[in-house]
Image (tube, rainbow, N blue to C red; front, side, top):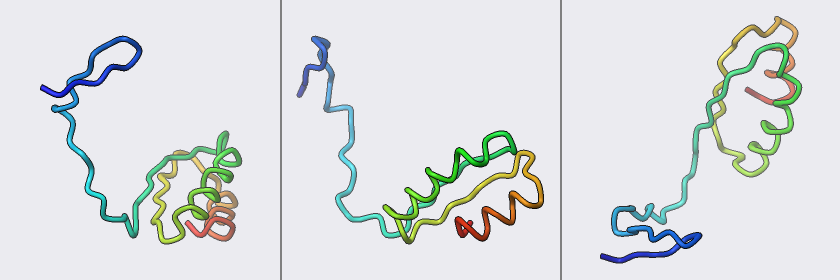
Length: 78
């Protein structure tokens, strides 16, 4: 059994699987927004688009106004 120690707690690392080292070409990010948090999300959306320009972003509408939906479509391309 191969173990590692983190914060003085032994961890059995043989139970963890290494992720494939192939690059992810088009990840998908999923979130949900309501009107009271739509503007806080712009930074996260823009950052995601910069780091993962080919990413698909899915946003569930939990109470956005028509104007907020248009703003997200136009500004964030989602």
